[in-house]
Length: 385
Ligand code: NDP
Ligand code: MG
Image 1 (spheres, rainbow, N blue to C red):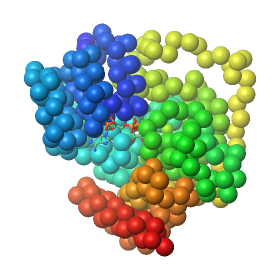
Image 2 (image 1 turned 30 degrees about the vertical axis):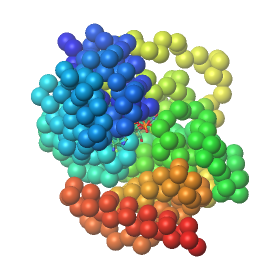
Image 3 (image 1 turned 90 degrees about the horizontal axis):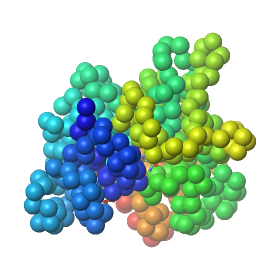
């Protein structure tokens, strides 16, 4: 049977790769709805190819352009539009591949409408993991992880009660072998030169600070219900082992393969089935030859420990950290601050923050907005100093 899917963030790194997966599996999936931000050119190409019935753009103006060019399509825009296309009757599965906080609201709406979610957007779980996982359970909606480490764990985990540790691997990013001085003054190109993965800019910078791994620890805690103290991070530069589960009897089950996002995207879409897809070459153990592992250097990458600490503290601390980090990364991408300022800003914001315990979604969104305003202010004042 053909499954109707909605892809939120279709013009991004995950979105475009998801469309490649779906194109290959066109007897199993129909792209019924697409959502993009501002890249109307690429969105138009995608519409021509995949012929969705519904489309959403970030702004009213771009929605009007699409409406004019494709009068047969129902076009929505903005946050409301994302909600509309995530809750359409005919949609069975929603791939949430927008970046940043934009993912939270449509994910919640989709879950409330009993849709299964292929979740790439990790910020959703960082901001509101407790609420999202509880809602998913109540509505019998599956949360299928797309993030490669979480897809790996999802494939290796059976009975949560038998788990001793989750082992999340990290490539170490572009600064794995750099000294602190080099990192402090790293420019944009250096921070964006990820050795293993080609991703959107925000997550690539997070991978350079290792904040991404911290966000992933929080994501894993919520997805799999494992205590923070039982989640380990291991640097594995080759990125062949995508993560692993250690059981109480000493067995470790790891998921291995070439570093390709097509595989976790496809598994989230076809779950529980596995079929032939884009990646047809077998993993060559002999050619791969070397599997190396190191402990993360927490002095060089303090963002990793900060994120885990905020996850453990809970309440809206992760919301504060996520918002401050995202604003700091945007400022770095706009060449307003130095690479090392990203951590300093995030740390200052979390140090001065009073968390709310057991927040509602509205409280989370209010806190998020408040922190973003304060972080921008902090960045402005830093530039004056
Ligand atoms: P990109 O920056 O490449 O893509 C983001 C997508 O979201 C684009 O389609 C963009 O539209 C859209 N978008 C951004 N802001 C808005 C908005 N306000 N309203 C509507 N649409 C918006 O990001 P990635 O694909 O790299 O990452 C997406 C998510 O997946 C992130 O949360 C990331 O952490 C996660 N992830 C990504 C991985 C990867 O390999 N890339 C791996 C694991 C997780 P447009 O470009 O048209 O403006
Ligand atoms: Mg990942």
